[in-house]
Image 1 (cartoon, one colour):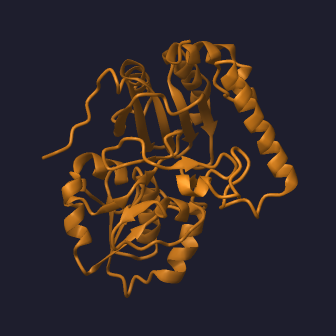
Image 2 (cartoon, one colour):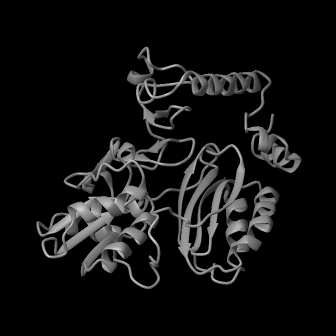
Length: 329
C-alpha cells in the first residue's frame, strides 16, 4: 500500500523540490520578480536559474508554496514542473535566494542537453525489479559524503567529491561495449538527467534513471518492500531524511557542511561551528577564526530570540518582515 504524507497542525510546512530543463533565454529577467515573489509569499530556500532551466528547493506553508508554483507556471516553458513535496514542523531554510548560474546542476561538460537525449525514466514502483536484474549496473551519481549515510543496496559508489568529477569517473570505469545496461539514481532526479544524457552521447544505448529520484522512491515505496538502506542527504537544515521523509538522525558541521553523527560530535575534533572530524586537519587558523566568529553571531542572535540569516539577508527589510510571518515571536 502506498505511503501517504498528509498535512496536520504538527506538519504545517511543506518543502518543494523541483527542476525543469527548458531553454530560458530570458532567465536573467526572471531573477528579480521571482525573488520578490518569494518575499511576498514568505517562501524560503533557493532557486537556481540558467539558460538550460530552473532548479530549486523551497519551503513555506502549503498556500505560500502553491502560490509561487502557480506564479512560476505563468512564465513561458515553466508550466507542468514536477514537484516532490515533504511535510514537517518547521521551515528548513533561513532565507530566500535566487541565483543565476551557467548550469542548474554543475557537471562542467558542454553541449549536454537532457531535452535532446537522456536515459529512460523508471517509475519508483518498477525500480526494485530493475535493480534485481543481474545484467543491470546500478550507479549512485551523488557525492561520496551523501552516499556514506545511505544508498541502495548493491549500487556502485563512484566516490566523487563533486558532480563535476562524474564525467572523468565514467570515462575511466564505464565501457559501452561491456556495460550494456546501466541504471542511475540521485536525490531528486536532476543529476541523472545530465549523467544519462552524457552516457547516451558517449555511445551507451540502454541507460535508465530513477524518475523523481530517491525522494520519490521513499515517498512511494513502503519500508518493508524497500531496497534503500540508511538516510537520504538533503540540502537544507534537515541534513537528512529517513524512509518516512521525516528529519533524520544526522547533524551537519557548519564549517565543511559534512553530515555528522552524535558520536562524531563527541570527538575532540568537533568544535561547534568551527570544525569536525572531517575537516579539523584541513582547515587553517584563519578559516577556523572566521567560522568561530560566525558561530558567535549565531549564539548572540539566538539569545536575542532572532534567527541568524547572514549579513546580506539582514540588510533586506522585506526579508525580515517575511521571516517574521513564518517564525513569529
